[in-house]
Image 1: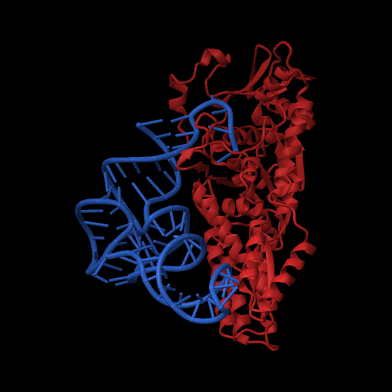
Image 2: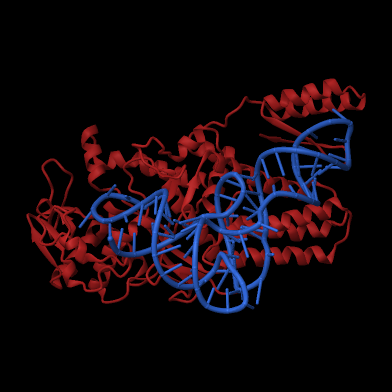
Length: 479
RNA sequence: GGCGCGGUACCCAAGUGGUAAGGGAGAGGUCUGCAAAACCUUUAUACGUGGGUUCGAUUCCCACCCGCGCCUCCA
């Protein structure tokens, strides 16, 4: 197997991925701020990191992956206050929803999913470390990081801070900061706000410090991989670097991976444009979890993903094609024996698939390898050149594929239920379906095609599709 | 203005210094009682525009145009 190349935002280059500790990957993902339901743009990033971790695991690497839940920030405090409930009661529902959504999208659960509010002490001690090094200053009970003390600032995003420093965009006064570039490590409480009483005074953590504190707590001073949306590169990740590296004296992250944004119909997704979707919005429209996952995964993560009504329809068709293929392999009867060429073909597909993913997670290329296999095998089957043993090899290739993409299993109903949706369409029991199929078969035997077609039509209206197979059998599936 | 991503067929989207993967959609055909599924054929004389380098560029260089994002709310 060839090396894995990852495009590193820090260097702007594709680099061979080599874990600092052989066999283990220490990875940190910026998780959601749980002030509301996460939107599909968020999930684009989370599906990306899921594909990444699945791929690394498939290469025999052990994951030590941390994802944070930001469960305290301005929006949370404000929203909770408006509802007159504690921030914990407020965020609980969205934490739950996030976990359900991730499950619905077949995203693996990282080894550590951690809440900011459970790590206040870690943040405080990190801030103390920075204070001891003289990198901070206090202003009205808040503590700020003095960017001027960290010369490497800007190395990730290549942002030129001289512009910001002098820029008119930022009203320095409002922040009570010495320098507009400085950012809050610790925020003094405002009246009525939730706060923690700590050794550095009462207050709550700034946004950036939580990621540094939690990442280093679980993963050590230097992590292999840090992922997040492209918008986080500046200032969030830049600030993480400043805090962490200044505190430890070690490089914070070896590979920075950023996912480009998802846009809707060519425009930024935003509530004001009315094109803002949560996962549940899509499910409500009747889209399957596997369709959404496929769509989010199919465009390489470094590219913007243009989400349109058409593109999700296309994703649904693509998944359908793959699933039909697997069903055919499992259910069709092939002559005994094997065809050496097919085993070779399956091996090539796996090799091409992995080569695609190895190239900075080029999922489009990896998918092409699978679809090539699908076509070649279907052709071989149609020509009668396919044998029983061949099916095992091809199925094994499809399994390899699905260990990463996770869209083949027919689990959409279950996944929908996990987010509280009952599968759409009229209820019909398998027994009833079988009975109708039997009746239709009988009608067909008597060449009563009118009746046979009526039954097929009736089932179709109830969401059941029939396929007559070559050997005279009938297969059915849900729409 | 600075930084970044992109502009490939009807749509999504790979890719390479030597004349374009894959998926979806459409059309025709094979199979089928008819469908469905599957297969075959078909839809880019050149890949935003204009220059340049080169025997040769979509692929390198330059300029320009357009889209999107970030520049302390943001995945």
